[in-house]
Image 1 (spheres, helix red, strand yellow):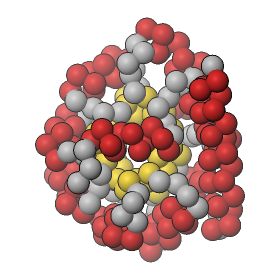
Image 2 (cartoon, helix red, strand yellow):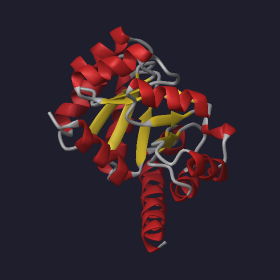
Image 3 (cartoon, rainbow, N blue to C red):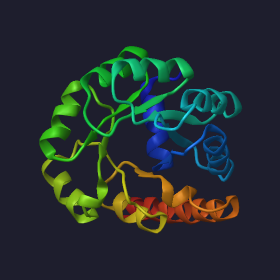
Length: 213
């Protein structure tokens, strides 16, 4: 089992958490495989997907070198079930202290959703590893940049409504990573591969630009 700092390092290197949410487990598994085969290394399966735990378990078995997590984790029971299935990060749409505590107890990443600076600080104090800025559609990259002037230690992951071509702007603004869902998975496998390629190219350029700065 990797240390949490190793899991964090993987997210920081990848700069993106792919999100899979579907109406049936087979479709979710196919979408996840397409994204992972295209080269992305961090992915969450929303627990709103029927059979999500089985999908997570199958992905962990098939892709042992990737970081596979659970999304829409709402309580400790869901968190424990996700960890038992093999989830290495627990992502929530809101701040749930019991989910964060369960993640801490099992050595996986806690990524609660927050929408205000107060919530973000509360989450960090509770032991969150990353802060999901949700929904990101209420924010702009320049807002993240300004927030980090006052609170530079916040490890932010904007999520919700982010298109692959826009991801780089959030990273340049100081986000650790971005969460991207339906913008990656909508359409066929070939389209998804093209979107992943666009996303990875944009994020590499943003990372190289931040190093140059």
